[in-house]
Length: 189
Image (cartoon, rainbow, N blue to C red; front, side, top):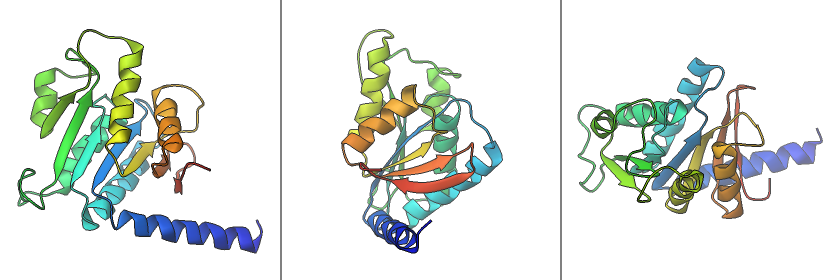
């Protein structure tokens, strides 16, 4: 790799870190099944902690089993026992955006309701594939930054969500469980 390429990558990382200083809304997308779960949990917890330290107060995912559930649990855990209530100024809200009212992904709606501060139902009616994508778009549209557990495959809901985020210039912190690497990506990457 050329030195000027490395310098540009370092500059891009610095700019993205500065962006994190103004972030308030963090969205999440990720796979249901993924490799290196311990490493992913550690990297995701560190990312959430950095976001909270920078003032992020809103964390949202699609509420599916797998990495969505891990994200929600880590976001709740990171705010600690003595945290300011989510509805107070300075509090942290943990939200699940579900695609339709009867959405179930590994737990009952009662379990999900006990796990998060707020459930947002994006569409009425029953299951349809487009509702899953609409839910993901709603998360992206309401986020300053997206965190993603994504292994690079070119299909599926996580891929489509990240493609939408890139088209809409929402920065993504990509946690790749296959390569055990993490980096910022933007619309042009």
